[in-house]
Amino acid sequence: MSYLMETNELSIAFGEQTVIDRVSLKLPKHRFTSIIGPNGAGKTTLFNLLSGQLRPSHGTITYQGQVITHLSPAARTRLGIGRSFQLTNLFSKLSVRENIRLAVQAAHGIRFQLFMSKAEQVAQTEEVDRLLELVLLTKKADVQASQLAHGEKRKLEIAMLIGLKPELLLLDEPTAGISLEEVPAVLQVIETIKQDKSTTILLIEHKMDMVKSLSDHMVVLFHGELLAEGTPQDVMKNELVQSAYLGGLYKDATAAGSS
Amino acid sequence: MIMMVRKAGSLQTRLFLVFFLSLAILPLIYDSRSLYILCTQIFIFAIFAMSYDLLLGYTGIVSFGHGMFFGIGAYSVAIFMKNFGATTGNFLFGILVAVVIAAIISYAIGMLSLRLKSHFYAMLTLAVSQLLFVVAEKWRSLTAGGDGFTFSVPDFIRDRFSFYYVCLLAMIVLFFVLRHFVQSPLGKVLKAIGQNEQRAEALGYQIINYKVIVSVVAGVIAAISGGLYAGMLRFVNTTVFSIEITLDALLMTMIGGIGTLFGSILGSGVVEIAHDGLTSLAKVHPIFERWIIFMGLLYIVVVLIFPSGITGSFNNWLEQRKKVRMQQKEIQMEEAGKKAG
Image 1 (cartoon, rainbow over the protein chains, first blue to last red):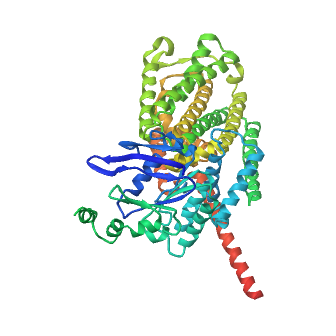
Image 2 (cartoon, helix red, strand yellow):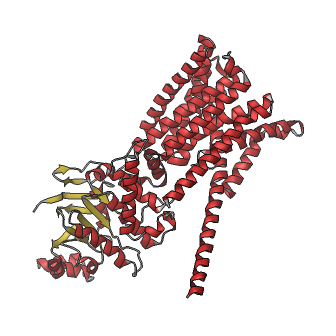
Image 3 (cartoon, rainbow over the protein chains, first blue to last red):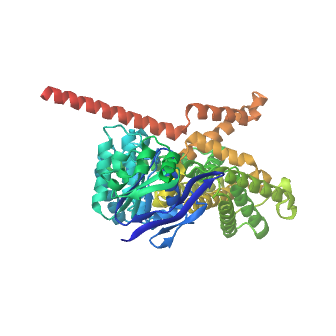
């Protein structure tokens, strides 16, 4: 099996506090991998390392055989790594359409141009319309992003991500803070992307049951360390994971394991 | 929907054209030297304020020393006119040299500070502008220091009537050029950066490049306005490098409405006309000599009550009205539906 991204002994420490401790991950191409772990396990920190918002204090990240540890977030995006943010992160005073259009424009490699051909304009408009439809926001196209409901903002964010056409999609708790009625719509959008089979997806979640049906591969992160990985069934059965999740402390679990 | 947006766009353009056309007719109706001078000054500062708006209104970059590019333009034109003779060629060449110097300096400042948090740019522009102020003060052989110097200019600049049209034309051309600039794909990224830098970067746009580009464009436009200003005064001294010039631009863009370009033109009009009116009241009471006090008060009122300025408030009002109409339509349709049902 070929891997799209690999990390080798990736660590980051803030002062004395080691938040990610020697994590070696392999993301299989065109598969859906999810990282689960309780609050404070370092999931978002790991994401920030992968997308370039943070630089590791130790270890390397390889993407398609290329070491990208020292590339900026923008450079990584251009290589095909797109990410969502746990806290909604939009251009809040621009319209929904304009938000998506900026992502499409980036994917088309239009960065410094002062003129845009008619054909390009039409192509962008068509793509934006298609994305609006995909995330069920067509009616809200001309609303300012700040006026959207929370679930709509998340859907907009996903639309922007797809607009970027990334090869690797990093989703940071896409259902966080959404009302229960809206969760299925968001999951459905993710399911649609997954079915496409051309994107590798890495998703963070702390509610295990939500992702077990979606995931091909599961990684458990606990106190910054890789606790277990495997198929969802294997992980669910893993005793270490159960004790970590069911309130048992990690230390107790390892102590029990060693004795 | 797209059709509607396009239609609104052309309506806006038509309104601008009507506005500019009436400015073009104005001197034919009113024959007053002082009016020509006031309007010329408004046009020049409108260009300067538009350049500041690119930084502040579109990209969210704060500059405390934007006046330096204005000063560079003014001194460049003045020195060329004085030393090489009052010809049109020298005037244009002076502006060209100012543009080149402004581009180099703004590029250097941008590369040095725009990677960092925004206040570094503000501080560095302030420091460099003060440095240039001192240079202009001390390099007496070239600038005659704080006393400044007068120089003669070609006839088309000397004549208030024709120079009115020169400045009006410059303002109109630059307005449409900059409007195209901010509406281009590049300009849209600038707006995105102004809104949310982190997000723009996550979309793959390299922020620093855009910030340096806008910093250079703003510097160059400001230098052109400074060159025109020197032509109008036929005199230059170190006040063109003073912090007040930057503050004027800030005041004009805030009052007119940031991030709209046209607001800068209105703001320039309001500030210059108020300046003119208030100083003429000095005979009534000496406090009006200190017209800047009233501008300070106006500024506070604007920030508290109309934070989006004249054009911004107008746009908000239009949008609000549209919203109410849409809601009324929906209610009507619902009622019609009920009746039909």
